[in-house]
Image 1 (spheres, one colour):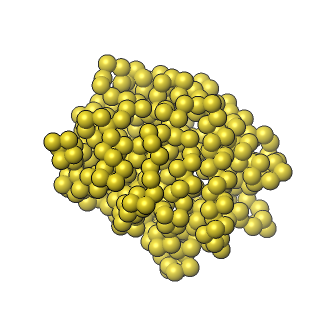
Image 2: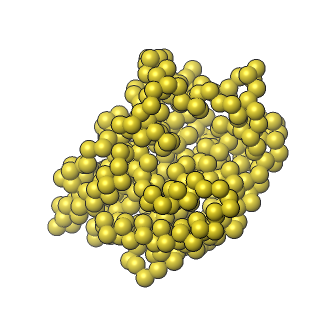
Image 3: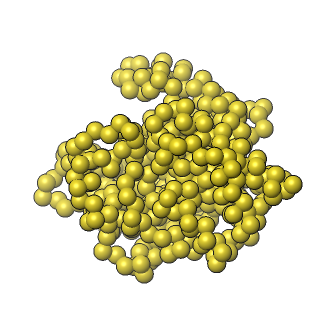
Length: 398
């Protein structure tokens, strides 16, 4: 994994805007998939070119193959979890998104407006009143057998497409893959003897996707928001109880990473990208030391939105392990305002002063492709990110 040797390197978390024609192809019936297979490599090449033009050093495929869902793609790559009609008599596994915040903002959650910007079909500024479908499911996912990975052809295609797109360019490539906690937290478990066994069974299965990515020489980004968002799912947990829970999640992630080179692994976690209050997010200080146990070289964290920007001070007391990289999100998904490069530079310099300039990369809080109001904003934000990194580099290296 590249380090910031003589300047702050620039990356992002993953999700980028898709062209309209690709969106239409992704929504077509299976019979039209030939056209999609022809368009996708071209679209990935185009999005790589746009990232390079913006000044991004560590690029990806825009997550185009995931069709806008960082979790949904894996459903076609594993077996053992199936869709079943919802049983109204079966209680939910947890209280759902924003569980702690719901207590203080019942009217907001009843309106459904919180769903805006969560990566779903409703974007910020275009909210549709009414409870979101995910709160009234007609179907649920249930684990009915051992979780097995069957996505070998798909991940090889993803890898080949990205490697072809970056060939000859002075960039590094990464592919985002869903973490085992995010896959196993939602579905009911009717097969494994416990939720923990379900979690570790999922980790075992996903290792194959992870290994294929690192074997190809690309960076594997594990997307695992559950490390922080589960605090909302279980609103009656105490901090000590939650820390113990996060220890188990980290153990499962490391199980999935067994034998893989840490220098090819980046962990991303966040507090959920939904445009909602986030008043009761778990403080970074309460879990950061545990998260640093994940066997990754780089850690991507939220650092620019108004609930978490102040947490840079955590690194005054918590030492980043030697050889590790911190990728603070200095560009946000929570606003359509385009950050000023001067502000981006200030944020990066602040982190560099604490953990070392060579240990910092510039990133985004979360994927911004489906979470801001228009694709023009996405590219403007990435340009501001790169310009801010240039300004910070000038201050740090002269």
